Length: 187
Image (cartoon, rainbow, N blue to C red; front, side, top):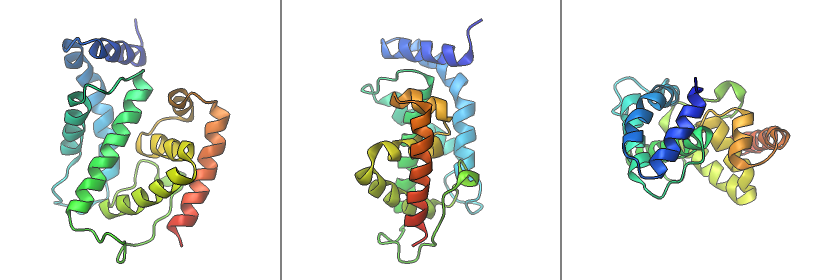
């Protein structure tokens, strides 16, 4: 019996090869994980806001499967791309709610292991997004690691696989990136 990870990778390869039916089998396999991640992002947002985890996943699905240029390598790469897509959706959503572009009224936030997967206030995504852009200019790989680990929920091993580096490199860069972001977010 094939592992779920192997099955997802196989279905992604089939979808990439043009077999639309592969998406019909793939979606139920990844939907639960995507919804769980979306739920963590939105867990502490005010009650009654218009963006719910299901809506976030559905919007991400439309972008993921509507873009024929995405060439997923494997399960880890799929979840990495989905993390990027969800991040963009959340940032766009927060901006559309009239967030202050310069961050004048934003609260300072911190980033540590306890917050992974639970960064919830949409305005905080704007703050983090700006810091991530600065980090990408400073060190692109560290920015990618934060995105994969924080937004994608990937393990150090999965992150290393997606980026084609060693797990040790991911651990080191993850530690450095968190420290750099912490400094940026607490100024």
